[in-house]
Amino acid sequence: MRSYEHAFTGGGWRPSSAGATIEVRSPATDEVVGTVPDATGADVDAAVAAARDAFDQGPWPSTSPEDRADALGRFGKALKARSDDLIALISDEVGSPRTWARTGQLATALGVFRAYRGIAASYPWIETRPGVFGNDVRVRAMPVGVVGAIVPWNAPLFSAALKVAPALAAGCTVVLKPSPEAPLSAFVLAEVASEIGLPDGVLNVVAGGAEAGERLVRDPRVDKISFTGSTAVGRRIGALCGHDMRRATLELGGKSAAVLLDDVRLDERTVDRLVAGAMDNSGQICMALGRILAPRSRYAEVVDALGAAVAALAVGDPADPGTELGPVISARSRDRVEDHVRRAVSDGARLVTGGDRPAGLDRGWYLRPTLLSDVDNRMAIAREEIFGPVATVIPYDTQDEAVAIANDSDYGLAGAVWTADPARGEAVASRLRAGSVAVNSSAPMDLGSPFGGIGDSGIGREGGPEGIAAYVETQSIVLPAH
Image (cartoon, rainbow, N blue to C red; front, side, top):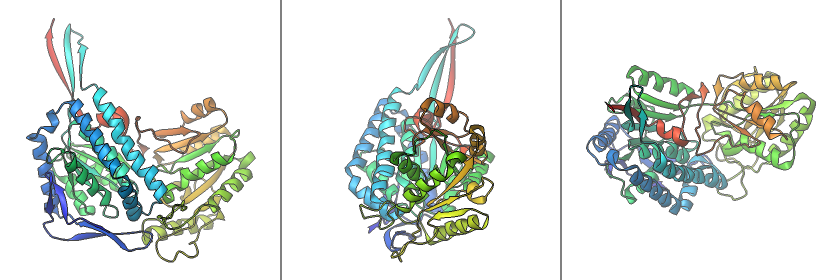
């Protein structure tokens, strides 16, 4: 049980103006595992005011890039020192197995801080360019200002790190609003900010639902919104920011395809990685590779191999070291995923394995991992984001058809190509309309490189130097001619 009585604003813990709380419930047991203050509009306003004052009057924006990089390094070390606590915390609030909380959340968040420590020290904050009229031009990268960072429940620590680290590296101040379903790890970030001596108001944390999020987005004192979440909410945020001519980065939904070429080696390692790409965190990942495209000449072989591997996944208590798949986040989410599966079968898909609730797990929101074959890319199951432990296998005849099917989606977040010939895989990957594509891997993301979507998957990039670029404005100072 972890309870926070106050929000973190202006470098201190402040009581909520209304005194209301959010109960954080474990998806594995439906028991309360923590509480945080439910931010009112006044609480959000206070957090923004603190961030605004810290940016306009505080030392952080003018701190040297080297000192900001050092602060990121200290931030990462302080998080690492809390590893065991954070792993248990994330597992409790999200329902992720302990192993995935360690590798998919903590390790990646630490990697983000480590990566930006290096990038911040080498980023071209000031460049001198030769002008076309014999003059020089100084091009400066200036912090964009106050950032509203809104993160989802499925990967709360990693998503927060992807926003907080580059924003701090750029010299911005941040108001972080976690999801009410999984806010606890964000409050640990606040503790760490205080512990390492981050200047007051540089990082502020308030938890709340849609009203708190809209209040943050609408506040004219906020210069930039960085949001990860659903496409529907992203459209709303984009419209509000566009109306006010404010910056926005939107990392939204996905319906990513894993293209198996006809020469793919279906060994145990490949099959396990394919299943992980679709099922990790119970499929509750924006870049989940849930559309698996298989050549018709090997279709039965692929379905059989994947079906056996999916059926063998160990579903159970996230705290059990042997658990590979935990629950989905809520009863509503489970109902929605079940409806998707039923509709797919009604549309003509074949249920290979799963599709129901596991025996013996009467508490919590568990589903058996599900594989569907005989899926047509026009079916809803292949077009809508499921956000659950469901994978589909779609047949194709030619390589060109596989590329066309992969690209036939409103989304364009990620993808993968599997082949015995990496050069051929890279050539096919370059034809996929997706922000990130992996060859022979279920992880189409590198922490030192840009990640983000095309189409309904969003606008902008996180990760790498491009991630810092999202938090800066460029200014040109034209110097006198020689």
